[in-house]
Amino acid sequence: MGCPQQRAVDGGHGSSLLPVSQWPLVAEIVSHLSQNLKVPVWCKLRLVAGNKSLTHKLTALLADNGCKLVTLHARYASVTRRRQGLADLNEVKILKDVVTSIPILSNGNVRTLQDVTKNLEFTGADGIMVGEALLANPWLFEGKEADSVGIIREYLDICANVHADAFSIPSVRQHIRNFLRAK
Ligand SMILES: Cc1cc2nc3c(=O)[nH]c(=O)nc-3n(C[C@H](O)[C@H](O)[C@H](O)COP(=O)(O)O)c2cc1C
Image 1 (spheres, rainbow, N blue to C red):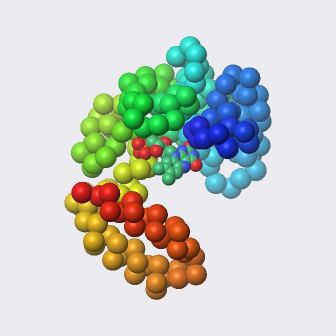
Image 2: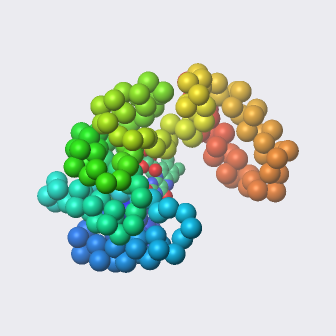
Image 3: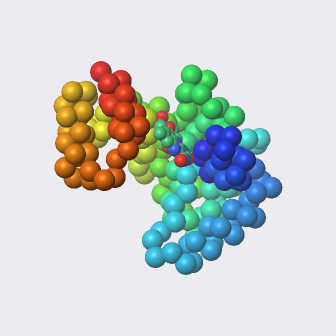
């Protein structure tokens, strides 16, 4: 319940499932999955627009329907560009205080390993998810300095030798572009 892209909204998934009107459907999906899958069901959401307590209520509803963990990307779905503002980690902190029945993961704003520590200390979350920074530096969680050339060499080696049939040139090009963003 995080993706705000138009195609997700048009398809009735991603952040289009956040409004209260969709909650019966969300409850049905999560309940059905959690009763029929052998793996635990986890959900990731953005902030629910409107009253601030709606995000807490949705999280509690997910937990009541068998969801075992929630990650909050603390931006509204209306924020589709990173430059429109930082994730509001205070909302993660509040959610963690309000919903105690399942683990809460924090998501947003991490660019370095130090950000991971600061984020967890501030929010009190049970863990963290990182997206974009890992595209530039997959070694982030090891605390290693990003080294574009080293990462590119390692990545190309994997492409050529480990899963040679699983890579398309456009995706390889995209990843190399991301690695070159690392400083
Ligand atoms: C390449 C890419 C693909 C993503 N795909 C999804 C997705 O399918 N569903 C989703 O909820 N969020 C998706 N996100 C958003 C991230 O999971 C994350 O919530 C967001 O980037 C904020 O975290 P960050 O600041 O660590 O990047 C994607 C992000 C990136 C960079």
